[in-house]
Structure formats: C-alpha cells, structure tokens
Length: 615
Image (cartoon, rainbow, N blue to C red; front, side):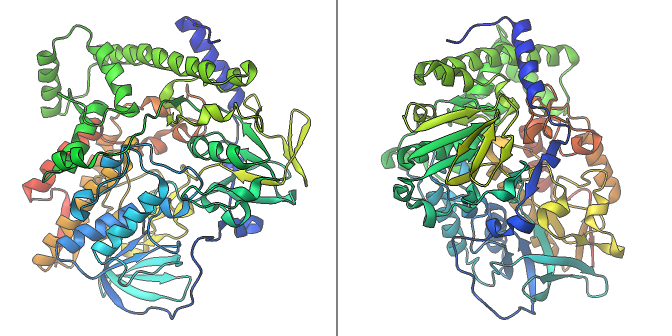
C-alpha cells in the first residue's frame, strides 16, 4: 500500500528515483530511424505512387500537412489566398495523427478544443476524448472542405528552401526532383514527428519482428486502427519498450490479444482517471453557437492559469491541476480581489513578485503531493499484485513527465499474460538475437514494439531534414545556433515571407497544442492578406523587434516541467536542464493567456509593430 511521507522524505524519494535515471549522454542515448533502421521509417499506410516532378509557382507553400498546414491553409483560403501547397513526407494529411495509428491512440485533451475548425466544418466529435481514426478523419475533412489537396505533394521530402534575391521568391527543391517557387513559405513540421529508438546495445541483432509505434505493422499483428482485435498475436510473445503516453494507450489492447506481453519499464507514468463519455447531440446543439469553439479554447486557457475563471467548461484532468494550485494559492483571498490583481498584472504585463511566486510554488507543491498520493493510491486499488503495483507508482511531481489519463492501462496488468519488467530506472541492458536482457535475465520474444517517442529536443535541421537559406545566404540553423530568434515565435529577421508555426517563444501551451496553431494561423492569414492587398513584395521583422521579443522571453521563469529536479524526460532535456540557449524555447512570461492577449491586441491594432513591409 502507499505510504504517506512528509515533504522532506518525499523530496528525498523523488531525488533518489531521479538519480537512478540520469544518463550523462542525455538525448544522445537515442538513435534515429536511419541507416540500418531506415526501413522502420517507411510509410506502412499509403502506397508510394510515382509522379512527374513539379516545376511551377505558388503563392504559399507549407512544409508539413499536419494540423499546422491544414489550419494555416484554411485561414489563407478564407482570406482569399487560394494558391496554396502542402508538402509532406507522409502519404496524406494528418501529421502526428497520420503516423500514430497504434491501437488505442486517442487525444488526451478534450476534442471540443483539440480538434480545430469544428465550427467551420460543422463537425461534432463523438466523444469527449476521440480516438485516433476520428482525428485523422477530421484532418482529412478540413483538407477536403478547404480544397487543400489541390497541388499537395505527399511522400515528398524537402531538400532545400532558398531565398532568391532578384526574384524575391523562395525556391524549393525536393527528393522527388521538384523545383518550384513560392512567394511565401511556412514550416510546421511539429515537435513530435521524427521517431527515435533507444540506444540499447545489440538492438540491431534482434532477428524477430520489430517496429516503432508510429509505424504500426497491422500486417503482422492483425487488427486495425479502428479497434479490430490483433488476432495474429495469439501465438506471439511481444515486448513493449517504454511506458509513456503511447504505451498507456496501446498496452491494454496488446494485453487482450498477445500470447505473452512483456512491458519493459524505466520510469512509470502517472496515470489519472479518464472518465470519457459520448457527446450528446442535443447538448452539443445548445452550445454550438457562433464563436463557441474560441470561447471554449479561451476558457481552457483561463482555467490553465491565464486568469480567475468564472466556470470550467472543459472540466478535465488538465484544468483540475490548475484548479488545485489556484485554490491552495489563493487560500482565503476573496474572489473579487483575486480577479482585480489578475487584471492589473495583465494590464501592466507584470510578473508576480518573489513573495507571490514563493506562495504559488508552495501551493503547487502541496497540491501536487495531494494529487500524486491519489494517483499512487489508485495503483494499489487497481493492480492486484503488490510487487507490480509498487513498481508502477510514479515518484515525481505530476508535471515532471507528461500526465496520462486512462481507465484501461492499470487493469491490463491484472491479465495473466501481461508481465511488467521493471528495470529500476536503468532501462534494458541488451538486446540479443532472440530477446531482451534485464538484470541478467533474458526475455525471449517474437516481436519488439518500440514506444520510445520522438526527437523533441533535436535542433531545427535535424528535425526537418533541411535548412532555410535566407537573405545573403544566411542559414536558419546558423541564425538559431545560440537559440531561437523570432518575433512572436513566428517571424525571423533575414528570412522574408517565411513563417515558423510552433509554440516556442509564443503561447508554449503543451496541454492543447492546436490552440497555438489556430492562433498562429490567424496571424499569418492577416499579415499575408494585408501584404497582398497593398502590393508588398516582402514582409519580415526588424532585428530590433526580434531582439526585444527574445529579451522578453528570457524574463520567463523556467517552469516546473523543465526543472532539473524532475525525473529525466523530453520536457527537461533528459534531466540535463535547459541552458540559456534552450531557455529561449520558453513561452511568454505571462503564460499562454499573456501571449494570446498580447497577439490579439497586436493583430487588432492593424499596425503590425515590429514588421517591415517592402515593395
């Protein structure tokens, strides 16, 4: 059973568990799906089709056909910019949701705010947290609704993007011989699209079947992404390496079908209740009034720390985290006074003073301890074997690793065919021709499933596979060599008519990434439409505006999720901590709410402060 510890003992326990997992090589402990593992990166979902190279001109080219490319394309089409091209290495649209078709894939943020453009496409999600196939279908719906398949290039990787000084356009080449130009370009390749493998000795020796979860092989397992049973595993011994968010979703399905399932764990996830439910069409009809989705997104931001909300429309595990902290931090402070203080801080863009910051941090720790004790107690209540239960308990603050929500994961360990192989923070020692070695014991398996995630912390060029060559031959990787330099996380000096759709130096809202995308799309569409109406050839930020914005970002206090006190993970650079270079990847000092308030006022002003428009 869970033993309640005082704060000092709990901090010591957290530190000891963290120390077990620290690896001096940091992110270098992983390897890419390249070289001898290149075949694991192939697209298993859409057949490759030969086509002639493209040599033409488009007004706007977008690298990435995930939600970023889709929403930007939709907003540009609404603004009258119809000549738009998507480019993606995948065989279709969807980005993360094109690749992640593993069994059980589901969004962890409420679909009402996670699925963009619901109002514009007239779609009602079927559940509060919808499954992967429904998310992919919605991405395809957006592409059809706004005509984004026209001119799209799939199964295509960009080789180079170079600014042409004389013609004032971008020249784009690809691995399929394409060589075309675009007046504007944007990059929206996302933080979670380059799959990685654990750097385990002997990994290349295994002679059985192996694949990454983002390249699920249903031909081998049977079943499909819609939930059909993986019947072909009935006589197979399957290993899963990793117990993060992906494993939390796919392990229950593997436990139902595999002859034997071994789950290899380095660090357990914190798994809170899910409480999913269908969306009631009558209720949806009542709330789906004009502007409803923006109101819901804004309400989520308020409940995540952007203010003192009068209600919680989302009411999920994410908003519960902030609600607990807020209640403990405010204590007996009257609600009306708290609201006034919040408004004043917003008005003057002020950071909390040290005394308030200390109070909030203390409230966070108290609230977090309370929640993590509940999560650990839940493990005891659900998992029948005491030793397995003890090994599944997370000993860290909830936001140190990506919080997970599931009502099926913990019960899976009660299945007689499912074995948790806990490595006590060390990871798998070795992979042989026939299996995996932990603590000197060989576990022979027929198949290894790598649930090892994506290259979150890699630099720009490694994640995209290409570089941008801007004015004067400057490479974007060089411009960003000491860390990000942008205005609003979107515009780069020396790279005219180019946009980077990503959340860093902007809202940096990890609990609902599509909100970042929707907001950036609004900015891009407005700026491009403005430039086109007035006949401008170029738009870019001044270096002064960029430098001022970076200076503002550097006033942001490092968040708990990036703390070196946390157990190692992709949020804190595998425990190495974020130096000054990586600190530039933080968001607005006022949080997501502060950024959205700022950028909304910036757009409404119509002055586009910090941007230069040239004819």
